Amino acid sequence: MSKDLKLAIAGVLLILFFFFLNPIVSVGPGERGVVTHFGAVDLKPFAEGLHVIVPIRDRVVLLDVKVQKHEVPAKGSTKDLQDLKAVFAVNFALQPDLIARTYQQQGNLGEIVERIVAPQTQESFKTAVAQFTAEESIIKRPQLKQNFDDILSDRLVKYGIEIYDTSIVDILFSTEFAQAVERKQVAEQESQRAVYIAEKAQQEAQGRINQAKGEAEAQRLLQQSLNKEILRKQELDNQRIAIEKWDGKLPNVNSGAIPFLNLQPEEKEEK
Image (cartoon, rainbow, N blue to C red; front, side, top):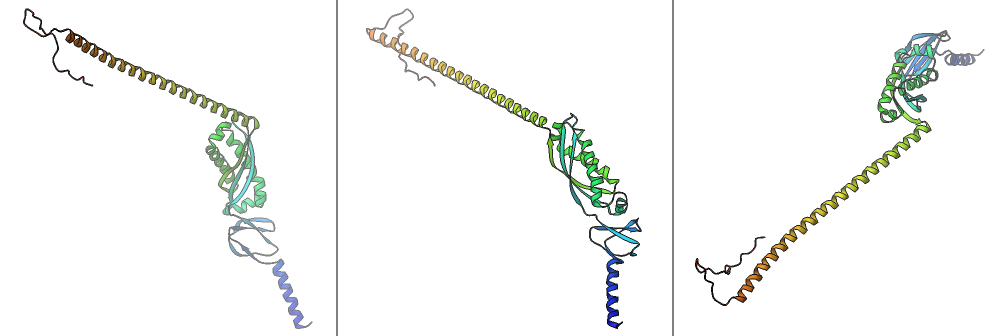
């Protein structure tokens, strides 16, 4: 066998060795490597970087420890027994220090979502929504979400899963409740309209009353002014008639001569 052939065979064997029996494992950013020795899980995972293993004996399962987002449908009954359906977006991450135990007990990421995250989300929603009536679940949605977050976080932390945030993607009520809400809204709108009409009518009536009072006061003042003018005119007419009938002689009375005519200048009436 020639030397070149031996080198070629050695090169192929070396490539096959590193391909099938590679002792070097690379753990990327945001990952942890769970090591098994002949199938037994080593509870100390590999951190990011390069690691050396024993081929055949060791196997490394890479798991993502970055924040994951999964949408989970859930349904439950409110305190007043109304059916309620919702879809939650759950943001969670596997705790790096506990990931080996989590993998040992639950499996890979997909199995963790299926076995733990989704069922616990559904159960947490049932527990949270049962504390509110259907109407309160609308009015007090922030409190409902906070209760749900607290319950879900307490349930998942013991599995080595940390909740970062949740959001309600969609929430649906039963057809009967939706119709009842619509009827209530219509009734409230009609009630508000009736109150508005009543207040408007009251204001218009008060306006007419005030107008009538104003007109009556104006008539009274006008009548009072006319009466003064009439009396003044009568006084002047009487004086004019007396002057026309006077013969130029002053009447004599026992107490002395006093003219009976008012010859003082006419005083202007104060306005």
